[in-house]
Amino acid sequence: MSLIQIAWRNFCHRSLSSFLTTLSLALGVGLVVLVLSVFGIVTEAFSRNASVGYNLVVGPKGSALQLTLNSVYYLSQPIENLPFTEYMEFFDSADRAEMVRKYGGDPALGERDGEYAAFVAGGYAIPLALGDYFGEFRAVGTIPDFFEKLRHGSNVDEKFRFKEGRAFQEYSDENGYFEAVLGSRVAAEMDVHVGETFYPTHGDPEGQGHGQGFVIVGILAPTGTPNDRAAFVNLEGFYLLENHSKPLVGDETIVVSDDWKSRDPDHKPLTIPEREVTSILVRNGNLMFAPGMQNKINEGLQSQAAAPVGEIAKLMTAIVGPLLKALLAITLITCVVAAVGVLVAIYNSMNDRRRDIAVMRALGARRETVTTIILAESLIIALIGGLCGWFLAHLAILVSSGYIEAQTGVQVTLFTTSNYELAILPLVITLALLAGFLPAWSAYRTDVGSNLAA
Image: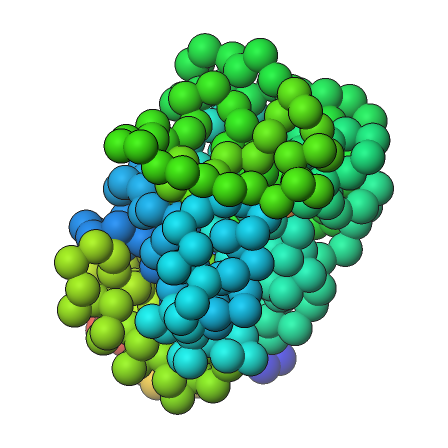
């Protein structure tokens, strides 16, 4: 009979004690693996969602992290608003002149290229206007290009797909300026469908509701990004809601094109002086131009440019990094406590096993053989407890996979692992072997004669 077989028979002979010791170790390992897996899921969600196609977010002066959280993740509160003319600085003279013609504004705005137009040539600049809610979810005013030009996915190459309906139009004959597209999670939790109308609230989820509603014309397929929990509305309709227009000052003479004035006599689009944007999503035509444009924007007095990937990396370093160290310390303490449990269980059994050990020695077993059997028993407990703990933790994650995907967009399976948890089992085995040395040394020193006489 091999030494491993003898150790296994010892393990089975003390079934209740072995089961409780192994269960204690499994629960400790499971808790550690569960914490590290959740940490890995959160880290992946933040890091992946920071890369959504655009490379810069432009907004008012203030906290770059707050600007990123607000514009990319729809968290936090907007810093302030930028005048629409700041958004126009990303376009050439032809596009600027068309904006003046459509919306009305100073004709001089269309006589020159925007200050940052050369940096964005071949890329895009998409405005966002925030401040309203649909239930607990953000209502985001934007333009149809949001769904055409933005990408998502792990390689930032996937286009938006619609589970139902279509993207909203700048103006539709059916619904005018008041069309909306909902993220998958918004539609599911608010239980609404294409063709229904929702009414945003102003300022916060419990704020006063606007009298004007938006017709839902599309519902996005799940993307695994913060866009799943946003309600996107036509920017033109957003501007027309109560308290969303900037008051005009002075005696401005504004000329609006006849075709836009005649589209909807009851809802004329706001003029350029009345418009503001919360932030602008920018992708440079050549990413080599990004640092130069970012520096130029940040040197100005009105706006700032933040790189989402960089800001999230700073967040991870400043906040999540220390948290990870604390989790790793807790992991080590938990594993040490579990190893001590193994030590206590085996050591307490030594008094009952001294006669058995003495008989083995009398039959010719060497001291080293007896020591190896005790260490093998400790190894068996570590292996079974570690593997069971890992399986229990990942089984819990698998059961919660639907909720995890809905909240973070991260798809998990039974075998989804984080880099840190791969070191847990070797660590547990090492600690269990160390814990087995004391009872093994006790077995090594067992006196054959006295224990046989007893």
